[in-house]
Length: 157
Image (cartoon, rainbow, N blue to C red):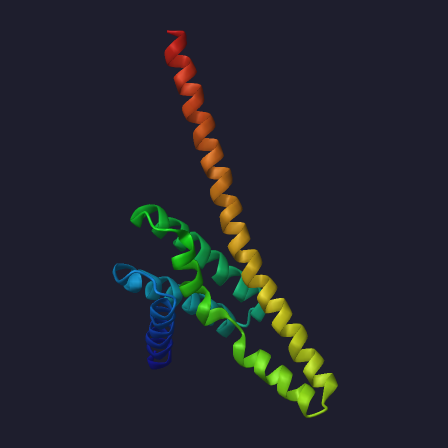
């Protein structure tokens, strides 16, 4: 339990800290931290339940994307503010560092394995964000079609 609390606190601080670095508006820092914290804890819980890291990253990035969409709509702020800060805990920076270190130390096999994992995790992050955007666009399109049909019905009366 203490481990989960530590994960929640550190991921919140990381996300809110990067939001500060990216000059996010002060009134969005808590939301940015919360989105990053929720994305990270989903990743952490899925990975702890023995789900593959790529699948867990995809699910967490999808959650970050959906929450960012909702926050952007609610606070009327560009989504990039929430997306960038929220995705920070999922970025495999330490793994990329280790991959590069293995290449420098002439251990190409391990370096290649780690670099491949970095690429898969990065791709999962990108796919999660894209899937959330596509889902939003599909929902918006269906709502617009529904509104248009209602307008036509009213005009026909």
